Image (cartoon, rainbow, N blue to C red):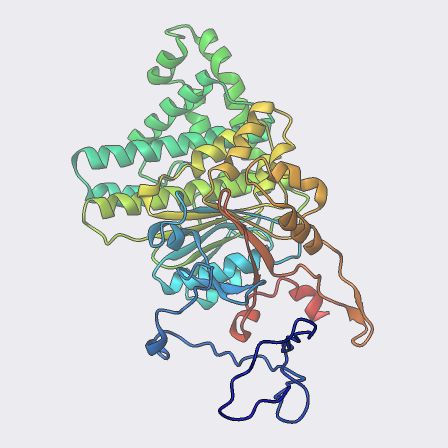
Length: 495
C-alpha cells in the first residue's frame, strides 16, 4: 500500500495482514541500507593522568588498585595492577597488616615478583633488605641499586651472634627508658639466637633453666668485654668458670657438683657449636657489620644445599641481626635523632628453617612478629602450604599456618590441585580461581620452531587474594633493564 503526500492512511481491513520490519543488528542490506558486514573495534589509548587530564576522572574505573608499585597487567581487563604490602597498608588502607605471603611451584617467578616490588619501593624511599639470599636471587639487584652485599659461609665471612650490632651505637645516643629498652631488647635477641643455635645443633629444645643460664652468662660477658668482642668461645669459658651469678641461677650455691650437673649439657652443646660444623661461621667476630644506610643483601649462596643445618642456622642468625638493626634505627627515629625510615624485608625459602629442627617455629615466630608501628613491610616466600603443615609437632603446624593467616594478602602462582584445600583454610577460593591456579602449574611444552622448551604457561602469573575478596589475576612483565638482574639461570646461560 502506497501513500501519497497529504493523504492519511486508513486502518487496514480485517482480512489484511500487518507486516513489521525488523532491522538486523548490522544494518539493512541493499542500496541505502547501511549494512556493516565487519564492525571494527573502537581504538584504545593508555596514558597518564597528566597527559589526559581532561578525561579525569574516568567514566569507568579499572577495577584494580592503582596505589603502589606497578607489577603487571590484569589478565582479564589488561588494566595496570599496582601492588605492594607497604603501599596497600599505609596509603590505600586495603590491608590490615603490611605483609604478604607468596606461594607457588619453583620456576614460576616468585622471586621476580618480589624483585619488582623491591625496585619500586626503593623508588618510594623504602629500603629493601634481604636477610639471607640462598640462590642468590637478589645480589645483582641490590648491587644495581647501589646497596651493600654481605657474604657469609665457610671461608667467606663470619657472624658473631653475641654482638649487639647497631644497638650499641644507638644506645649511646639515647637516654633514660629508651636506652634501657633498647639494651634489654638487644640482650633478648642475643639470648634467642644462642638458644636457637644450640637447639638447632642438638636437634632438641633448650630448657627454661638453660635459657636463664645463657642470659646470666651474657650479662657477665657484657661486664668484662667491649660490645662485639665476646664470642661463643668466651661464653663457653664463662660456663666453665662458674661465677656466682650463674651459680645463683642454677641454685647450686656452693655445691660444685650441682652446678656442673646443671650446666654440663649446655656447655657441651656450645662447645659442639664452636668445634663443629657451625663453628667457622659463628665462633669468630663479625667480619662485616650489617648497615641499613642502603639496600642490603646478605648472600649465603656459598653454603651447599646439602648442608641444611648450616643454612638454617645462618638464616636465623641473619634474621636476628637484621631485625636488631631495624629496632635500633626505629629507636633513634622515635627519639627524634634520625628520620623515620621504612623497610621492606624479604624472608625467602622459609621452608628450610621450619624443617631444620624442633622448636624453630617458635624462634621464627618471635623474630618475625614486627608490629605495624615499626614501619616495616615483609614478604614471606615458600612453595606450598604443605611446607608449613609438614612439621611433626601439631603446635608447630598451627603456629606456622599463622604466618599465612596474619599476612595482609597472599600472592599465589601455579599450584597443584591437591595443595588448594590447605590454601582454602586461609583464604576462600572460587571455582574459576581454583581452575586458574591449577592451569598455571601445567608443565611447559616443546617449541618445535626454536627447538627448545617453551616457558611454563604459568610463569609470571599470580592471583592476589585479600581475605574473601575476589582475586586479581595479574601477569608480571619485566622490562629490558630488569632482565639483567632477574636472571636466576646464569649458570645455564653460560653453558
